[in-house]
Image (spheres, rainbow, N blue to C red):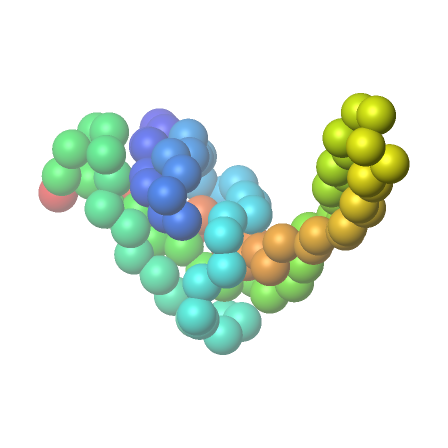
Length: 90
C-alpha cells in the first residue's frame, strides 16, 4: 500500500518502511508524526523522526555577460529524515 502526503509545500509518494527526507520539521528525534494523506483520502500516515540534518551543498553561480559581474554562493538546506511506520485506512 502507498499514500501521497504533503509536507513542506511538496507532495511525496510514500510506502511503509521507507525513509524519506523532507523540509525541516520542528520535531525531535524519536517523535511520532501523523500526516493526512492526499491519496487515498481519509488515510492516516504515521511516521517517526529519524534525524535532523542538512542536505548536500549546492553552488549558486550568477554571472552577467560583458559586465564583469560574477557571484558564487553555496547553500545547504535543513532536512528532516522520517521513517514511514504505517498507513491506515480509516
